[in-house]
Length: 110
Image (cartoon, rainbow, N blue to C red; front, side, top):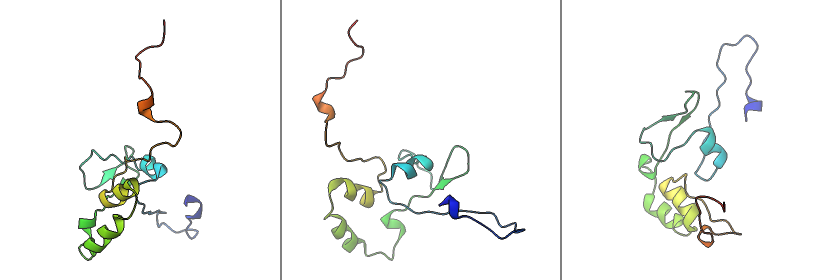
């Protein structure tokens, strides 16, 4: 997207990019330093260059929340939680290994 930012020669208008995304993109979560534990209305990155503005269903009073919720309830649990609750931390389980199969040890054999 950054490769498409441009302005007229001699213009002083700052080049800005705006984007919207639903939870599920690790790139977006990392780039905007999204932290579900933070309570701020706007979360600025440590360098102050980027801001994440979360939006919930309650932020859109014109939305038919009941119908939207019914539609989301048809999705799988991961995608439903991402979209209904705005959860950036929920991830699908891996298909090859499950964490509970392994014993976690503090140190290897001596």
